[in-house]
Length: 397
Image (cartoon, rainbow, N blue to C red; front, top):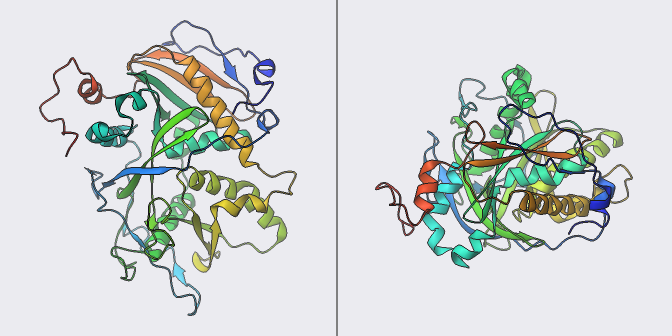
């Protein structure tokens, strides 16, 4: 829900116009947390519509072949002693981050299953389609103090599509990523290798290659306030022993963090890292985050489970903490802002929403390259009066 007084407190801001910007109004949306306190908005329990997998070469498969199974060490045995540096860099195959995939994999799934969506084309026409990670950034925006973001938005056949654009600052940071940070990224993936097996009941095999092209993605449906959502997110693993085997209730998110030894360190962890873990797992309805705490030598020495619905308890009485209602109210307000701003139905027209910490969300309007993100193959296949390309998959495939 949108907090009271939002329109009254919104301020117009001057926006530096890029050269390829089209003329138009430049509305803005404030992001101060105080504007979004209030009751928690309606959020429909997410339901899984389907899934897809990406293989070692990042090729799409409309099945669950990349799904892994949660296989933690026995709780009554010795503590974990996972060497997260093992295999780096010799057995590491990182994804090529220069390849900008946009929404392409999700759009391919949507093309194959659009005829089977409950509610049919009319439901899709009113929905927002995006990645879970983009919504996570929206949820954490009122409390984010370091990294800005840009979201490109296009309306096509009524549906609002949102796709992230890498900011110049993020690109510069990625290209100048120090070796230690690259190794820390590897260690997160390596932890998953220690905790997951390829088949239920089997043991993890940490001797293989860590290939970050491989991914299992869940496609989910939900609703925030009045906004129907169709989004997809990567899933680390499923727990064969979960109380419910129904996705997404059986999914588990895996994380690593450095060991903490003082109340101040834990307080910082709860205020900052736990907020991002909560947002990432609450949106798709993943019930638990299992964290491995690593020592300075890169060994995981302890595991701790954080139930998603209990994370807020760690900051409930912290004046510097975060509030789930603020996160969700801001996300709902942004979706309303985007829906009322992007009114023209044109896949080549892009409204670019930009945000930098402590400022409002601003908008600029562009056509075609470099911001247009809905691929021609998708637009043509979804347009009824155009002949479908011969290689377009059938909805029943």
